Length: 619
Image (tube, rainbow, N blue to C red; front, side, top):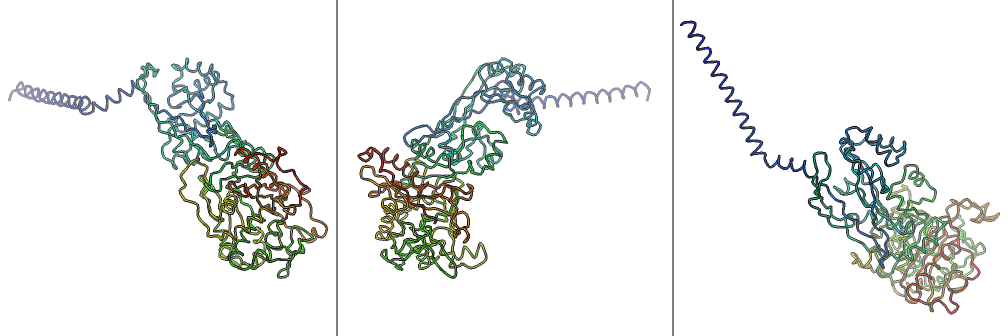
């Protein structure tokens, strides 16, 4: 074969290979074009549209919270805020410098923002400033083309017109956290209910998110709004609270540490539930600094604690009515049986003292409730036994949740033989029955549980479920406790005498409005042990003791005495005597409540005149 033929064949093979490569490349390009323009046309059209149209979710307006008559307890207001998405900022240092200049940010704030940017995900917007004034907000909007990643927007802030008075009931909102997302799933918006009604009814109050479509240019600036769906506003709620009464209760308890509960004895609606000291939920919805938060956490009087449902106290003498009912039901005594009180009760080599050092002399059940004679109930408790006392306490709801529609409720403690063995690995002692008979020892209750107990004593023996929601259908109807009417009448007469008879421990706090009076029972709970030496030398009065060593003051009662409608419980931590501190507060609250219901005061235009005070019992 000639050289020419060899070279010609080599050229043809090369030409063929080159042509094959060209055909393959063309086929590849054609396939890619087919994939991009036909198979993936919808996807890329969507991406192109996304470059042209910004889609953002809109936070719905949060539902309003009102009192039973429509007065606003939680409202919404406009706020101007500025946010930053760090990964979208081309020059973060320059962006922060401009924001500091226009928003007046302090150097400390800028350092805090840098730490948050460093620690958090760069794709997540972080708040730069809230409640920005209009001039600064306008200046940022003018500079937007040169501040990529910065987003000024108009949001909503939660405001609480009644402030501290309703803080523990209504609660407050705060920035959403990872824990909130785990608890409730995806949350649209900046805030979430953090406590109280705001937390408990978060799903109802939050509403449904809206969507906003806007067209943007190549620089990301808004050209025009295409479509907006505002979403569904949250559901507004009417609470059972009477805001005027709630305000009065808070004012009356001011300066103390404690709580008060006022409830309808038939429906369970709470007209007032206050805990003091309190806090301003407006501060919390805006966000408090770490130092302020930690200071409130360790404060001696615990302003963050809703003491009405989370405070646990020995009920003291307010528990004596249940011991009396247990004895009457068992047929162990009659209301006329008497016990002689000398001031000291001797049992098993121990001395148990009555609050009245000189004693009460011979007293029957009515007189023992009226005068709060400890000796009578020491003796009665031993006759009844801890098993019957425990059973009666549980029937009235102690040691269990009341069913209030708030989270975090404490259950208290109802001691007994099994409880003692389970918690202390030892047997029950008869001496512990003695002190349980006057509502002390291991027994613990919450103020709300005491209010529920009082309602049952007043309404004929039905345990109601307390509620904060107005006109809510009761999920669980009042539970009859199976108490004999004649036994309840004995207890009711004793409570009437405690407030309205000269020897009653709350006689100084009696009231008379349009022929209607208050029935009730005082309680004074020791929080320290009084030694024999101190008793011999004279018990140190509460006024001379450090605050944390003073007795708790309690009062439970109901009005009107002849047609009960409302129950009340007042607990003042380390307040001193129940008759001197808690009972006068309850009287003032009930006077205001009766007047608000259209009742007229007595002829002199005032509640029945104050009388000289009787000593509060130490039980």
